[in-house]
Length: 367
Image (cartoon, rainbow, N blue to C red):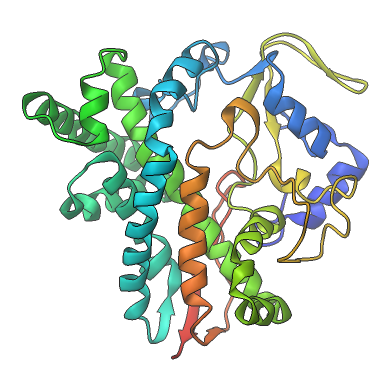
């Protein structure tokens, strides 16, 4: 059992003792080199058809590049990539700064930064990116919370179906009345079948949501746990970029990648993983591998180089990584300009290692 509040000691023991280990029907990889290879090796993939029979409450939205291998993955990623190009990201950077300013301005006294900043920010940004009405952000947030934070299959399925219906309504509206937005371009592209189209829009909104929430929450928590680094960032705000990279390395928002599958027998050292078996590359363990990172358990906001795998690697590297970084820099950069005190009490963490973050972050916020 890996403790949720601090998984790192257990992951250190796994990496030092049995770095390739089978647990609960899956193979866990904990060394940086093995994790990096698993994310690059064409003999290891995500195609869910090799692992049938799993009850998946969101099966109807799985046909997107997050769950597919080439050539389908390549085709879908090519269509999605322009949405995250430099011009779009530059426009969204201004919008992110506006949203963060509004969210942080009202903070005073005892607040939960997760509920009041980290959760609303990515949904507002992704709604803007896709072209959903900003007035719909509240219900998108409700569906997202149910799907990513409830861990109850009936609630996940109900929220997923509601979101799918909403996406289908928005797509039908864009076909009838095109607009200058990503949703219209996808709806009229002619290169996606219905399932791919709905799944891809779903992924765009959802994939970066919880990642960004946890990056902000975990990152701010580590600064509060390391007051010397917090003081260093306040003295030199230009360090915010490298600080966010170190937050992703030291205690990142994603504990392990989505399950992968051996598409052929694959060997990691003396261990041969049979075709069809599930493989779990543990990003948190790889990012503290002493073979790659000197003093891996030291939180250093100016660490360089910092070749962490916090947002994946290779063809499955997070397409929205630039947006996640922008949001974390803006939110954490704005918050550390205020006086912050972590309120006493035990923190509640997400119940599984995949999504790694605090559910609440109660702070006393001053001027």
